[in-house]
Image (tube, rainbow, N blue to C red; front, side, top):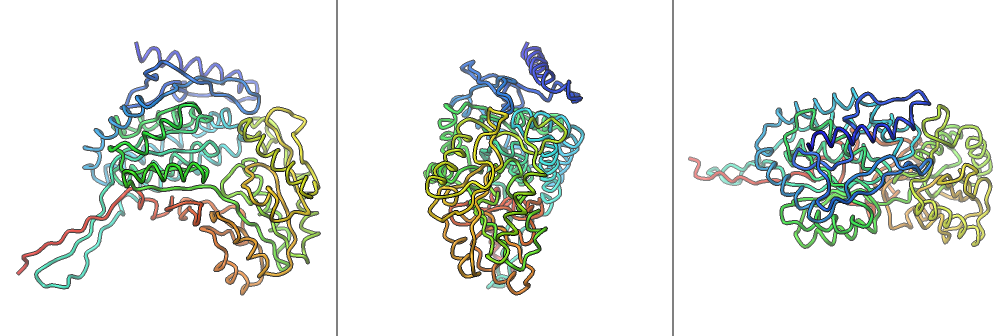
Length: 513
């Protein structure tokens, strides 16, 4: 009966999405990727309360499905399942885990178009960007399928001839993965790939705006042969999310927490985890400086600006937020940016061929973007273009350039998370570095310069965890992703991605003759 109910509900969800997709020439191959149940202990389940909440398409506001509104009781069940699975999963070999992760990756590649369609339907991303995210997301599973076989220990020279010192890495246990809506596929795979490769099991809490992508990922994990309980997905509405998060951070069966989201929420989760001294990884808010020096290649600077500012409609944690152009290039740069926005950006439904900017994710977020712009204008900022909601209505906001900007304005002090660029003029390298570093966040930064000496000086002094130098697209599975200051703790991706999911055990072998 449970299997029949799941199949019927998946088909119902598919019909919702097909009404949205088929007239544009898109369609789903597999109804099984579309789930309206949570995934706990290898089973597709409803909330114990029976409650659900709606998932809507931000492009048009239409409901595309309903998923379980799970609470503390459901979350504890998921943690229990992960804890039980960990007892055997931690004893699998690195090669065995690698084979399963490779199968998972292969399935993601085989189903990448369906995954992209689901992502566009629930997140509003242009389909080309969704395809890019799916490729980026699956690459983490591929990477950690390989990297998991290289989690090495150490043999340390002993101070005594009668002893040998060996350090080995072991999985920490059950981990809670709390992920955001702006990259609902890649933020899960970046965490889960590292956790599973290390020998941990996980409970995934996706953002309430984008749970369907998480459930599709879990479906493919199941098809790949990952044992029951190794991957679990708990879906919860905005009202239930705080209670679910509390359990995910305080349960004695949870050994670690990885969270991507705002700094305010990250601080709260950090406090919760402190009660159990849990291992924690935080990838938090950013307010990235984007600096264009007089020596910059103007075309490259504009290209970097466009990708770093308007990818995902500006809704990325590493979006360029505070734009600085040196006085000698300022006028040309501003004019070129305005022209590029006018010619290159097309807003609308993400499934339409030429669209490359979608809607803001939800009402509260577009209200925030609008408030930041309006409050900055009241303080003297000038709107060069945009500055209001788009004629498409709903959650669309016009690509915007603000000039005559000062450091006291909200568009500089706050992370905008929308298609708004606030551009300031500066005179000297020393001046712009002081402005760029006068921020409590330190996730990413960008600068453009053809002066070799300046490149090294600025790269050393810019207080961020990641820097794009003459490049506006810096994310890569091979690179260590993360920030400093209030932008987080730890690194994701790269060989360092397993650090949050392992601990070092010291073996002292004595009595050696």
